[in-house]
Length: 194
Image 1: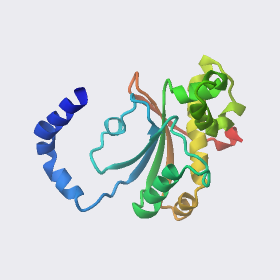
Image 2: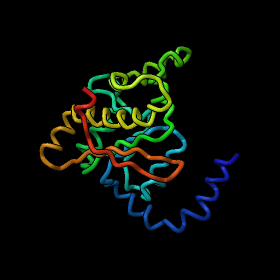
Image 3: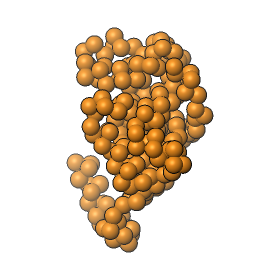
């Protein structure tokens, strides 16, 4: 099994060279960034950001969706609150990516009829549908619009709003193009999503 071989290689070759880093992490973590991205296997947050263990706090889910506060998605809500109120991160990055299946599905909800849980999950970004319909040429723009929508959702979390008002937290939207290694750093235009 490839994963077991990877663990063996890590323990024998990688871990010894990083022992000092892991020793320091026994005292706790203090990442500066909460990185919210898609669970797509082509997106590797630490590789993309060139960060090591303990440097970024990560939430991953289909479509890098930030549910609205109070939606009952306690895993995501708890992780955001922990990152902001306990770890005191100074940045939150929402990182979408090219060829995102969740956004493609959102643009064509009928295609998800046999996948009702996925359909219901991606519908949390239904505001994006006000701007786009199912069309392959619109997927890249919808991916960026989805990232901006998640930033809008983040601002509605009390802990995020408080930290931003104290100028202790900034939000960033990215779109990663894994096929080229490029990252679009989005300028926010939340009015486009209303």
